[in-house]
Image (tube, rainbow over all chains, first blue to last red; front, side, top):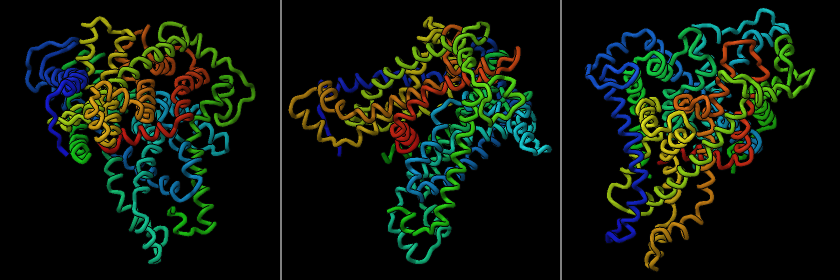
Length: 292
Length: 290
C-alpha cells in the first residue's frame, strides 16, 4: 500500500529522527571504508599518509608468505567450521525435534556457549587441549599411555584446534536456525510420507531436509561472514601461533597495521576481508530486504 | 503434532535419542565444568591430577587473586577495575544504541517515503562489515576527538556499530504492526512524538528486551575494539582476561585463569539463564529476515 502523505510537520520530524542513524552510517561505515580503501593505495607506514602508490600494497600482500598462510588457514577454517557445525547443528535440531524434553531441557545446554565470549572459550579450550595438563594428560591418567593429542602445539595441526573450539561455540546457534526451519515445514508432508511407509531415515533425507534449503542458506551466510571475521578466538587460543601457523587475515591485518608499521599493506588486507564478506552478504541482504 | 508423535517411535529409538542428547550435553558442558572445578583447585592438583576430577583441596583464593591482585599487564590490580570499565562501557552504549534504533526502526517501518527499503539495506550492511576495515580511521577520529584510550571512546565505538543491529530489530518488529494504528492516530491529530511514545513504545517491551540483551552480550563480549581503542586505564574485561591468560612471564596459574574466565563469562551467562527466550529471539532476528 502506497500512501501519499503531504509533507507535513510529522514527515519532517520523521526525516529528522532518522537523520542521526543515516549520518552515523554514512560517516562511520561508508566514509571509513572509503578512507581505508584509499589508504590501501598509499605508502602509509606508522601513520596514514596520502602519497599514491597504486596497487603496490596489493602486490606486496600477495607475495607475502604470512598472507599466504593466513589465506590458507581462512579457507580451511571456513570450510570445516561451516561444514562440521552445519552437520552437527542439523543433527541436534532433529534430535530435539523428536523428543519432548529436547526443547526445554537440552536446547539451553546446547546453546549456552553462544552467550560467552570468544576469549573465554579460547581460554577454556587452550588449557583443555594443552598436552601437559589437558586431554592428553587425562587420557594418560586413565591408562591410555600412548594417547597423543598435541595439535595445539603443532604448526601443522593447530588451525584444527581453532576449528574444534569454534564449532563447539557455534553449533547450538546453527541448531536453533535449523530448529526454526523444521518447525516451519508443513506437517501434512510428514504425515503423508509416514502413511506411505517412510522410515525415520527416509523421512529426513527425502522429505524434511530438502525443505530446509532456506535454513542452509542462512547458516552458510551467517557462519561464512563470522568465519572471515574470526579474530578473538585465535588470539585467545593460539595467539596466531605456534610461530605464525594459525594467522588469519584478521590477525594479519592487525599485526601489519599496528605492530609492524605497514599500514598500507594492513589496509589492503582489510579491503580483501571486506570484499570477501561483501560477496557473501550483499546478495543475501538484497533478497532479505526486498522480501521483507 | 510433533514428528516424533507422527512416527510413533519405539522405546528403543526414544532411548537412543535420549542417550545421544545426554552425550552431547556432556560435550557442551565439559569446558564449563573444567573451568569451574579447576578454578577452586591448587595448582599442584591441576598439574599432577586430572583436570576432570573434583578438587581435593577446595579454595576460593584463586577467585580472590583473579579479582583483586593478579598481574594484568604491568599492574597487579586483578580484574576488578576492568570489570568496572566494562560496565561503564556497556550500559551507556546499550541504552543509546537501543534508543536510536527504536526511533530509526519506527521511521523506517511505519513512515513511508521513497527508498526507505534501500536506506534500511544501506544501514543494515554496517552490521556485517569486518571491523578491521574501520579500525584505522576510527583510531584517527578518536584521537582528533580527544577520547582515544578512554571509556568514552569505547562507548562511541560500540554505539555507532551497534546501531545497525538495533535498527534491524526494531524496524522488523514495527513492520509487523498494522499501519492503521499510526494512521488512525494521525487522523485523530496525534503528532510524531506522541504516536511514538503513546502507541509504539507501549508495544515495544519484548523487542526492547531482545535488543538490550543482544547489545549487552555483544558489547560485553567484544575484544577487537577494546584491544584497539582501550588503554591501561580503560580496557574492558575481555582484553584484561586475555592479558592475564596470555602473559608469558612467571608461572602459569591455570586456576586463576579459569576463575578470571568465569568472571568474564558470568554476566552474559546470567542474562542467558534468566532470559534465554529473548536471547534466542535476538539470535534469530539477527540472522534471518531483513
